[in-house]
Length: 227
Ligand code: CA
Image 1 (cartoon, rainbow, N blue to C red):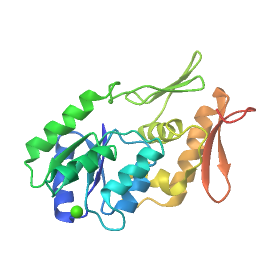
Image 2: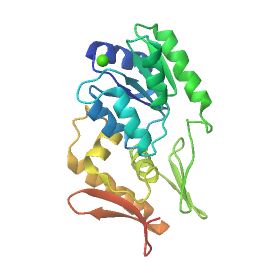
Image 3: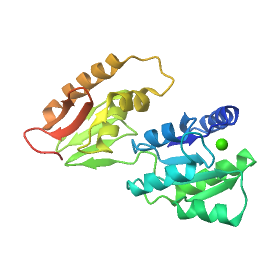
Image 4: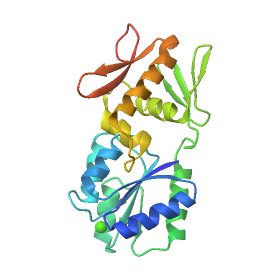
C-alpha cells in the first residue's frame, strides 16, 4: 500500500514517514501543497495524509482540486484546529477522515488501517485491467490473452503508472518521482532505459509506449487509438 504524506513541518513529516515505513507502508513525502497535489495527481497512491495548513497551497484547496479532477483517493486530513466549522470544511471538501494534532502515532496507524479497509478493493496486489492488458503488481506479471510476461519491480511500477492513467501522457519527472522516489539520485536517462526495457517486453502484446516529444510517454494500442 502506498501513502502520500503532505506535511510542511519537516521533523514531524520525517518522523511520521519513518513510523509508516516501519509498518510496511510505502511512503512518499511532500512538504508543501503544490508539490503534494502534483504527486497526488499521478493517481498511484492508495491513501493521502494531508496536513490542513500548508505553504504554497492550503490542504483543503488541494483536496477540493483533487476531487474536482475526479481523483477519489481516500484522504485523511491532519488539522491543528478543532472547531466544528474546520472539521465540516475538511469533510465537505472531500476528506474521508480527519485527525486533530497533536495525535498519538497509534491513532494515526489505526485511522490508516480503517481507511484501507473501507476501500472497496483490496489495495495490496490490486489487479489492474486496461484494454485487455492485466497487471498483477504483487507478482510483477503482465498478462494479455494467453501471454504472461514477468517484469522486474521497476518495470511493474512503471507499467502500473501508465495503466492507472490510460491514454494520458506521463512526464519523465512523474516517472522519476513515482518509480524511483523524490530523493533519488537516479538520472533522467534511467527513465529512458527502463522505457526501452518495458517496450521490449510489451512488444508481443500489441501495446506500445509512445514517445510524446519533449514531454514524456503515453500507453497506446499498437495500430489503434488511445486505449
Ligand atoms: Ca502545517
